[in-house]
Length: 143
Image (cartoon, rainbow, N blue to C red):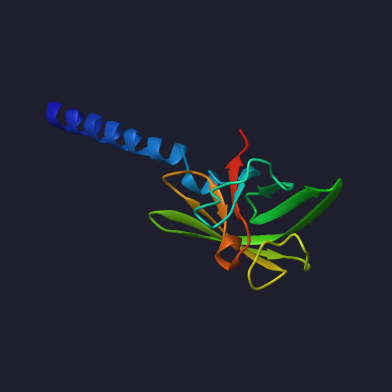
């Protein structure tokens, strides 16, 4: 009887420990507001620009909708849409689909789609615009 009681206590302690992993869900770590903090050039000789040419942020909602806001030359532009996520061991990749075309979409091929990614070991959000001679854009999550 004591062995069965010990077995039950051991089982309950193992089950309760395994629930700790679910408290910090990685799928929610990207939800919230991300603010542009660095802008650079893909040319290694020009590593970064100290002054941002504009202010910008993304807000990712848990229902797979997002908004992007840019403030440049005193003008504020906000656009929105839906996003999908692909996770790998090293990265979290986002495909953003805007409800309309806009000049603030930072994409090589479209004014209504954009791709972003988080390198999991760094935790910053990066744009892919630098692949086609756009600036390298780096965002940090607002706490």
